[in-house]
Image (cartoon, rainbow, N blue to C red; front, top):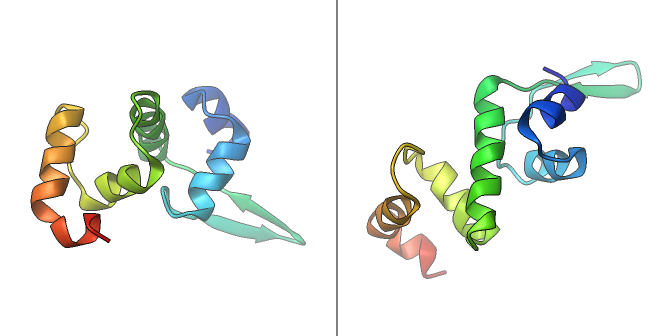
Length: 96
């Protein structure tokens, strides 16, 4: 899927999609077309974008969100449990 399709499907504006891609929240899958770079996204990327927005909306900061995503903890458990899992498994990272 292209950025415009992801923007429509996820509800996340293009500028934020670019930010999340550039800062490692979602993978960078790209193809060079002449001087232009086309980025492609998966359904999983859309779910990740929605998850980021959900966590931001309840006041979780981007640093913590990135740690949650990188930890691989499931989105099927409560936000409280996601953060508790993160705290139990990444104590030294959180303290930095």
